[in-house]
Length: 268
Image (cartoon, rainbow, N blue to C red; front, side):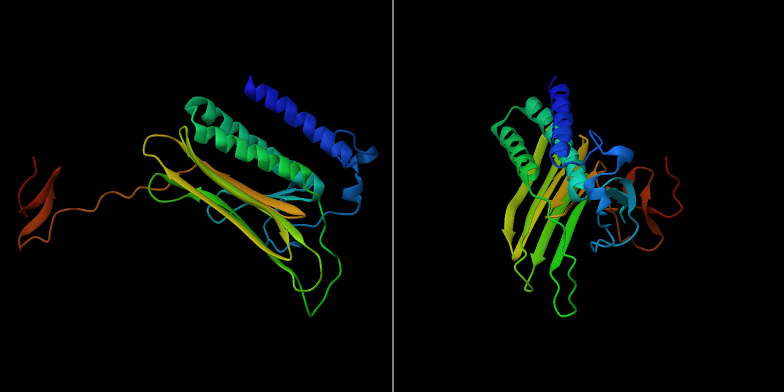
């Protein structure tokens, strides 16, 4: 029931928000063009996010990271809606865990992500300035990483930093991460912060030998957001041998037995 209601709300919000922004597939101008698409959204490469990105939808780009996990960028107003969709999915994941666990901590974590969603819903989209300067350039960096960690663990790391000594253009930034194994979850959030020199960082990690785990990272600034989700736990290396060193003509291990045994002895 919760999921059905949330999905209906999310769809209603996406259409309503897109309508208010006069762009969306809900009520797009003839030919599918929108005011923002006509002004051309920046690409991830133009935003300094590197190469290898493939456009999946208007304002939505993805690529396979070095760790083999897909990462996403949402650009402009259309991309903001895609980023919100990822936050809605994260909220649904936490809501299921909160219902199963029923603790004050899980309820607080659910309230935390819902407050972040409201912040992002209300955030203004501000495109980067087209004014170029060879003498001065504001610096904006994004990090949104989610992947396996140590043995049976997952981790998520999100960060945004902004430094502008060139003019009065400010940036509003926000980060969020969670790591969950079974019904146990750890989260961290930062922001929103606004200024000429601001930074936000979030990190979460958790491990379980018996439960499935997931990690999620989200980072947002004025014009774009980045996010990543992971369901793979860290590799567990086999234990190191406890036997040895052995004297001459002796070797470690004989079947399941760990210890020094004569080199030519047959194992049972």
